[in-house]
Image (cartoon, rainbow, N blue to C red):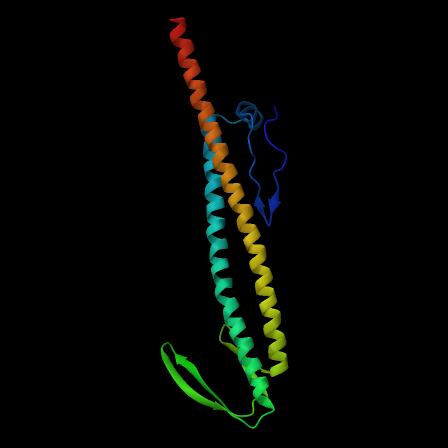
Length: 186
């Protein structure tokens, strides 16, 4: 029986967990006693949990960013649709949290996009659409990669927890066998 599967892989710097089939061989090959092995596995589990929290925060940010980009694309599309007509666009916009103002937008050849870090740039409607579409596609792709990374990470957490349980149960079994052997020799 092999000591572990050979499918320990790495994904974006996250080391793969090693599934242990034969605990005794695993401990012998790694040169660890049971307590050291459990400590190592517990430390690895904590590292996985920390990375998972970071990924979940990134996922929340991306899930909040994608609807905002979609709204911006819709606004730019509306401005482009009104561009050829003589009709003015009436819009309510948020000045501050909970405070709105009404604006009358007549011929809009350009829009200003908030890029973050106190930077706002003026773009033509076509450039703004292209930039927003690129940002939207990048955010969607990043979210897909992040979801795959989270699934990989959850698999590693499960494998590590199962390995910890196997090592612990093997140790309990060994202690019981030693205790039974000691009582039978007495």
